[in-house]
Amino acid sequence: MLKALVNEARLHLDITTMGPMLIKTGYATIIGADMSPVLTYRNGRKEIYIPGSSLKGVFRSHIEKVINSIKPRVACNPLATSEDALTKDNRGLYRISCGARLNKRARNDEPVPSHEAYRESCPTCRLFGSTSFAGRLAIQDAYLPEDAAETQTYIEHRDGIAIDRLTGGTGGGAKFDLDVVTEGATFTTEIHLRNFEIWQLGMLFVIIQDMQDELIRIGSGRSRGLGKIRAAINEREAGSHLGGVVLSAIRTPRNSERDDELWGLGHWLGDEYALYGTRSDDLLKLSVPVAHTQRGVRSIRAFKGEVLERLQEQCIEAFVTRIQKWDEAPTNAQQRR
Image: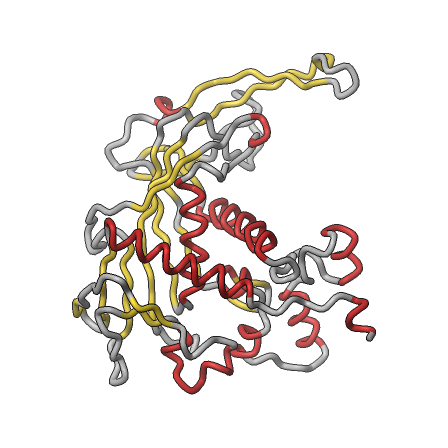
């Protein structure tokens, strides 16, 4: 079923720098600053951008911390391949890597069907994926507007100096310089979520809400004051995008989602919900009905303004409730009993 399209969510997210920001290029430079921002060719010229992979990494890292705050031992540590490494490095906050656990079964000639891999994955791996399961959240590179000024307009040069950890003074001759993106630059990315449960949409809204509240920094030098940003869902129409959060479902004979309802994956699955570890009551009763519009094979709705704010509140509440009820991973001591 997860190889079929059931429901989708799309939105454009505007990310504005509220101070200097640096997402470093991975290439060494012979001349110029020691640390420079990533650049790409677009519209026939070089320009700065925010890689989608960087955004996805920040999203995942942040929501793992949020989940740990709600209930420990629910999210996995993708780098922890054993319980011993986990307890030493993470003080019992995480469970072992979902990918490592499922891949170990595969190596032992225990094929893991896709529905079972999904059911046994932690909340973050269900959304972002693991080495054994493809994620269903896609984040595009974030670009400046097409009519933006030349790249150098958005870059400023800064000098830096290493600090001696013993004296607190400057380190001998350890000078470096960096080019950073200036305050006030606005980048836009597109986020696409497919086959989502209601709480997963809420998980995405939690991240966006914290970006709106300037609680998330991105890039290098965050402890030195770099990377402060603010985000907002773009509600303007652009091409085929209707603005706001656009939710769609494939038109099928059993597509009976009403205007005052929003169905999650579990409800769409019907009798198969238990195979994937979802819930049959995975739906919302919308406080304000939003009419469906038929577009090709999809039935779509656009949420904006107060309707969008209410949707965010309901989905975030569903996320918190779902995580609170999620089964914790057993510790070594519990497994030995």
